[in-house]
Amino acid sequence: MRSIGVKLILAFLAVGLTGVGVIALLAGRATETEFRQFIFDQYQDAFVDQLADYYGTHMGWEGVEDMFPFPEWMPLQRKRLGPKPGGIVTLTDDGGAVLIAGHGYQVGEEIPGDKLETGAPIRVDEQVVGWVITHREEFRESAAEAAFLDRIRTTLTIGAIGAIAVSLLLGILLTRALTRPISELTTATRAVAEGNYEQRVPVRSRDELGELATSFNLMSIELARSINLRRQMTADIAHELRTPISVILGHVDAMDDGVMPASSDTFDIIREEASRLGRLVEDLGTLSLADAGELALVRRLVNIKTLLNKVSMAHLPLAHEKHISLQVEITPDLPDINVDRDRMAQVLDNLLSNAFRYTPKGGRITLCAERASDGVEIRVQDTGPGIDPEELPHVFDRFYRTDKSRHRISGGSGLGLSIAKSIVEMHDGQIWVESKLGEGSTFVIRLPTSSMDL
Image 1 (cartoon, rainbow, N blue to C red):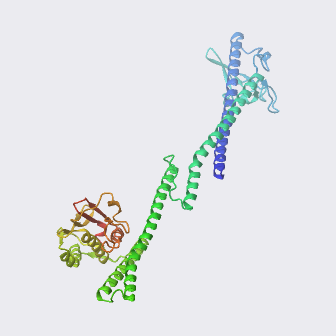
Image 2: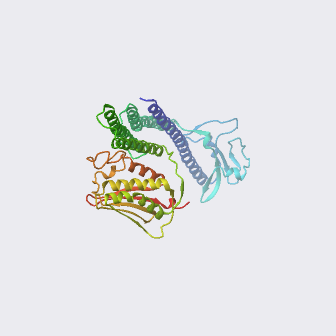
Image 3: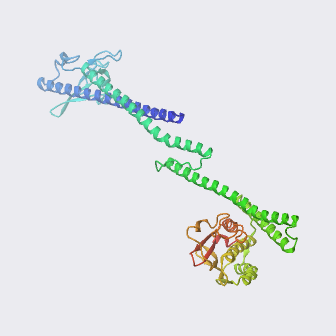
C-alpha cells in the first residue's frame, strides 16, 4: 500500500484509539463513581432508617452504642484512611452532641451546625432526633460489588477493543476509497506524460476528488484537442507555404530552362505568390503575438460611423468589380467605442474579405451597427450560400475552409477569421456567426460597455 494510504490508516487508527480510550476512561470512572455513590446512599438510608426505628422503639439513644462500631446488616467493609481515633461513623443527638465517636470526635463533644449538615438527619415523627455523619470515601465495596465493577470494566475493555477493531477496518476501507481515485489520477497523469492524451479517469463522487477527476478529464480533452490542432496547423502551414513556393520555383525553373518567357505576366504571377507568402507569414506572426498576449492595443475613442464608412470605402472597388452591392447601415446616436482603430479595421477587413469571397455576382453585403443590451453590435451580412450547421463551430479554426472544393489561391490563407476572433477577444468582446444554408451568413461582433468608455 502506498505511503499516503498507510498514513491515512494510522490517522484513522489514532483518532479511533484516542476517541475510544477517552470514552472508555470517562465511562469507566463515571460508572464506578455513580455505582459506589448509589450503594453508599442505599446503605446510609437503610442505616438511618434502622436508627430511627431504634429511637422510636426505645424513646431515646440509650444503649445504641452496643450496635457499634457497625451493625451486621451493613455489608461495607471498614477502611481506615488516617490516624483519626474512633470509627468511621459519628452519631449525635438532635443538638449535635456526640453519642458515638468517629472521625476524631469525642463523646459529648458538640459538633458545629455546618458540619452536622454534611451528615444525614435522623427523623422520628418529622422531628430531627439525631445526625449520622459518615463519608463514602471511608468505605470500600464488598466482594460482590467489587466483582460487579470488574465485570463493568471488562465489558468496557472488550467494547473498546471491538471499537478499535471496527475503527481500523473502517479506516482501511475509507483509505482505499480515498486513495483509489488518487492512484487512478496518478496512473492517468503518467500516461499523459508519456503521450497518451486520450487518457480518462472515472468520476466516482461529487466531492473534491470528483471535481479533481472531472477537471483532469477536461484538461486531458483540451490537451488532446490542442495537440491535434497543433499538428493539424503544422501540416496546414507546411501546405500553405509549399503552394506559393512551388509556384514561384516552378516559374523560375521554367524561365531558367527557356520553357517560359520572362514576361511581365510571369513576373506578376511570381509577385502575387510572393505577396501571398508574405501575407501568410504576417498573419502567422499576428496570431503568435495574440496567443502570447503580446499583441499591443492602442485604444482610443473611435466613432463607429467613421470606422465603418472608411472600411467600406476601401472595399468599394472590389464591390464594383464583382457587381456586389455594399451597404452601410448605422443606428443614429451610437456612442464612440474605446478600441484600437487599426486592429478593429483589420477585423472588419477580414470579415468583408471573407464575405466578398463567398457572395455571388449580384449579391449584397451589409455592414451595420446598432446598440445591444450590454454594449454595441457590429454585423457583417452577406447573401452567399450560407454555412452548413455542422461546420459552424469550426469557422474560426485556423486554416479551416467551409468550401473544400475551393482552390487555396482564391480561398485565402484560412487565418483571417482566427485573427479576427483573437483581436475581438482582446477587446473583451465576442464574435460569432449566424448562418443557414441558402440564406447567407452574418458575422456578429459584440463589444461590451466597458469597451465603450475610456
